[in-house]
Amino acid sequence: MRLLVVDVEGTLFKTSIKLPGTSIDSTIWQSIAQALGSQAVKEEVATHRKWELGEYKNYLEWMEEAIEIHRRYGLSQLCFSQLIASAEYNPGVVETLSKIERSNYEIVLVSGGFRELAARAQQDCFIRHAFAACEYFFEKSGRLSWYNLMPCDFEGKLDFIQLMLREYQLADADWVFVGDGANDVHVAKEAPLSVGYRPHRDLKSVVTESIDNFQDLLVVLDR
Image (cartoon, rainbow, N blue to C red; front, side):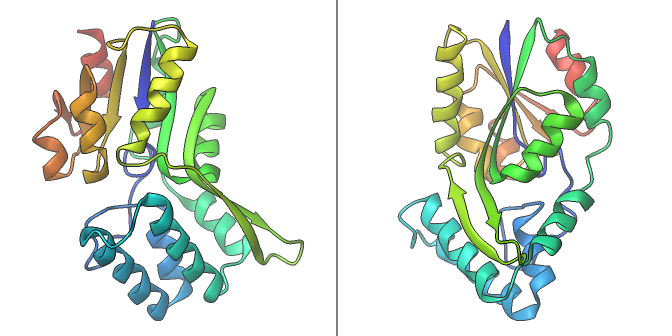
């Protein structure tokens, strides 16, 4: 058995919104900013610029600033839940994951996005393991009250993969990675087999395989 480690935002789910001035795609982070209005969008884009310039110590610090934008402009539980529920899967995702033989591959989701979105994929595709960077807690009034953060994006994704390899007593070579974005480059370089789904140009240059149709993942895994 091997681990099939899959990114969530952009890989399983579409990134239908790409704010001008951003180089890292997301399904929910940028959708929240757009839902909160033009000033929230402006501030969200500014955080991307700060990340590119190395002005954050780590990914957690970047998320903290984005969360403050959400709180400042009044993100509600209703708005957040609607964005999670309305996120669309990329074509063929659910069908493809349902065809993967689980005795051969244990699927593990690792995302720099929201726990709530990863949980949707877990339920729809019967996936037992998911790590996601942010989870929101709301008051009964619907106001965002607090959050949980995990450093599982960029280089941090690899730490969670290594944890699961250890838990399943698998060798360092017993995993496959599937991702789409520039934030997946580090993991793709370390993976024994890496698959880029409609990959960002930076990712495309380092992955083992590139696919434009998610169903082609089955062909790659069967080789």
